[in-house]
Image (tube, rainbow, N blue to C red; front, side):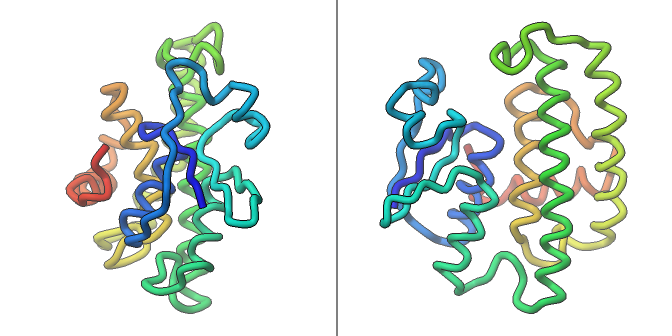
Length: 203
């Protein structure tokens, strides 16, 4: 197997953090985003979307979405499950993971307009649009603030793929761009601090 990654990318970090938490060591290739290697003809043959991550399996199949990569690896390495150990816990984790995935999608749209760092995604960033998108981001943060309750992590006492997914957009906004994200949600703010202290969260 070979994982093509961009270490600081929001979606690649879902897989990077998962691998660290799971204790899986697979060969990796760091894409040179600064020089648009992810848009090169060679990489587009592997992943036509020109994005990271991509996991090329032993059979040569390229898995090009981070959630699918994580689920594939969970099936390959079932020990120490990160997606729940029974049908109810898996349903709970998957529901929260999908909320986190939606938060990434909305959060990235917000970032594309809140900063000028993504010209390939948004040629004309608009603070007015960012302010409108903030409402949609906050809607999901409000839900997650309730869902976490008094748990240490989103789905309970131990981290799961729901945490790995949701954490990445927080980290991107807060650390790469020094922007507030979820700071007005005290439970999520505490959760972020707890997860950020884990070795898997280091850049």
